[in-house]
Image (cartoon, rainbow, N blue to C red; front, side, top):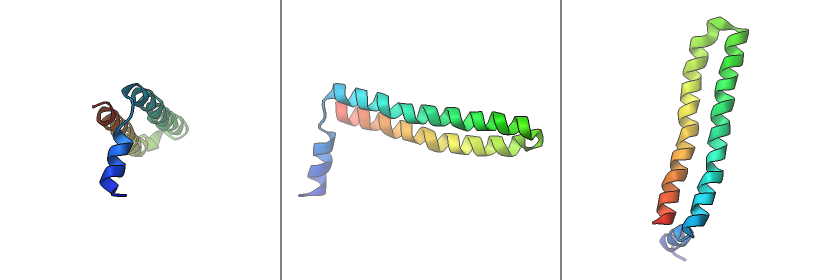
Length: 81
């Protein structure tokens, strides 16, 4: 079977099902962001002089985690179109 046909079949979902899927998919990045900044707070409390390094690492990982949510919302719009 052609890969394009498989991709189109994967996108042909019920819009309501796509909304539920995105809602469930947004839970992961939400938890991830919370864990990232909780670790920064804990690390800064233990070693205040490392705050700059911790924050730069936190913003980098925050961006990576948020990409997951952005990919999810793009997939939602593709599925509901």
